[in-house]
Length: 572
Image 1 (tube, rainbow, N blue to C red):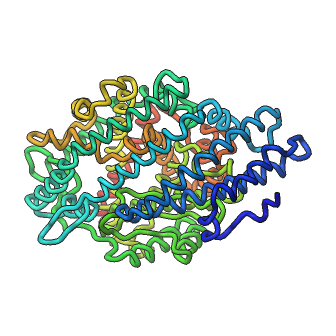
Image 2: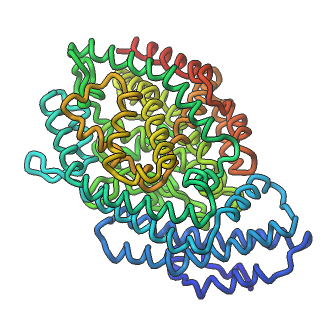
Image 3: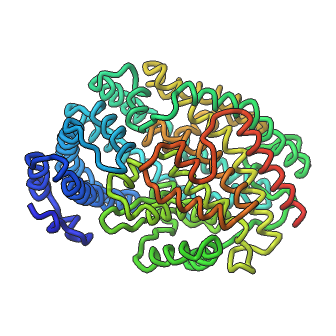
């Protein structure tokens, strides 16, 4: 087979069928594999895997762009069943062939561990179950994507309501907007709980087939968590409860006093305590992009060039519309070596934070583009470090958000946005711990947690433990279903602690930039370029950070953020 005949343009890739792919897989499986053929064999496998992966990504993205389009959903599910499932089986045969050969190409130490973990967890009998799970994910996205409310005679998505219930200066308006969104979500309570039961049944069957004691053990291998354990996560939760929960309470208590309120309610968490007008950084997507170019350019000119490339190739879907899935992401096309960014514009500071965050992911794709598929693809790069790329960019770009730098804000507005962002980093750690410890409880108590209402009760208990400082009196029913909208729990189980660990790394990168911005960015870019060629702690080290779970490292990070917040407050 001539692997150079594999398609490279999107239209041809999307037209591929399993009968097109199968001869390439057969060639790799039957071809002699020794030290003289290893490099070419790896190159060919990488090209083939990249093609299948790009087809999947190009079919997956539209399902989030148009959640109500049944034809788009069908094309995606057909691909999973007819192409992806047999391709995964064929990939497992190749992994087995490579591992049994005893050969190891240079730069594949980590990839080999990942391949072995894949081989250990792969069961052909799980392929239809994984396809079934993916259909449940699509159904979850459909439910969440259809959640709209009528507001002043207009139909608005939950994303469009964010700027109202977070930033409207009228407290009564914020309360009504918050309750309108929560009540709409509550209408889907039974549907999401029913779907949750189906998720749990499928995941239990997957675990049983894999011969593992519980789904957490299965996902630990699937998430390639070689460098830390569930007990490390629980140590991290404890450190957050010790160090960060009190810091979060300090933020809420100060906000309460500044607002002159008896208690902080959910709709008071984001409003400016000085009652200044809400920040509206970019009226249009075009303005958001133009200013993003300038901000990225100040961090490093190469980032401006790369964002411009994404604009030129229409690799940004940033507007807000009905039947568009919630959330934001960046995915890579591993044949084109180009990333794609998805988010929903709301003309709020969240847009700026999101485009910086997803921009960091996109730049990670660019920096690692020189590597082979198994050294750079999303499923092989440790997520704990992938999020350093994104959260690190949020902080590295923060000094350049002002209009004098071509950015979004006046000096005072920038100070407000940066304070909110850094306070948000502190406030996020307790929420991250809540989400992660909740998932540990779920899969340690599979039968009990298969009942969505029991999950609601447990979520409420954990919320009260980690989210201190916000009064939910009379709003318990909304608080208890908040996990319904936390998509990771449903669609990407156990993918959340990565954000907390990565944020700890990102704050360390930020601390380095305060001392020497140029060197910090150089270290950051060098670490991104490594893909998955070195272990997770070494990736952190390359970026100038330490991979840690302890209270002292957290305290150093919180102290740095609180000091920077104090500096920005002098600009107000």
